[in-house]
Length: 290
Ligand SMILES: [Zn+2]
Image (cartoon, rainbow, N blue to C red; front, top):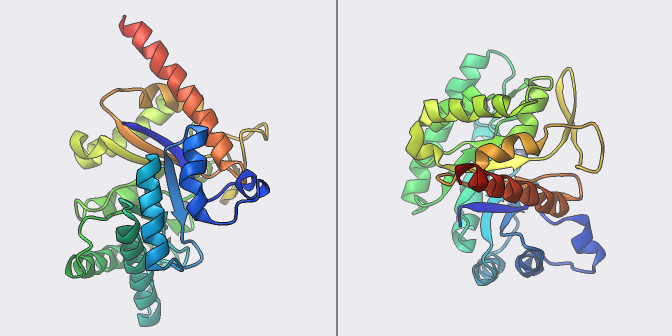
């Protein structure tokens, strides 16, 4: 399977139907035709070993690819000892939970760009090196870390910064959040060519082989001059970026990708909507090739 679609966390409709436990999600997703799930540890890694194991078993049973979103409190650029230790713990705890549930990727927000941006990046690279060293000692080498492109310029996580972090080690891959890139750039992504430029920069930085497997976040985003304001849904009109511009590029059969949708409350519905657009792009690509 080279195309995976799914939600970040549990959508409103899941709860409205009376479900309470994330353990119900793998089957729920399968029944709707989705095959990826980003488990949210954004307020802390609170999942126990047994629950994580069970979630992993159910995900395997229903063919759902798992990833984890690490706590929002991660700040690779933290300059004080306390913040550095917390960041390390949040990332390592997320990687441990990922190993329990068989998730391949831990997505995280790189951190604050306050003060001297170059100095913040230098601290971030050192910190990430420390986390990877410890992960190796803890037997967590198999889990990939994915710094996410961010929607505000006050945060580390421009595409260039994320790619620079990826240059540190093969165990780091970019989480390309197109909604965030669009917002941070003041409405940057408006055509297939605009999206192609982003993918080309990933290939230029990481090489074709490492760029074949993409971890993508996609949802409409409302933004101001300062960048991202909030995530919207495809049912709110007037908010980009438009997935129809990206779909023809993803229809490249040599690409393998996981697209996680973060639309506000409708993340599963919008993931399905994006999947249908992607399938149309694949079908018309086949016609073009005859
Ligand atoms: Zn995120």
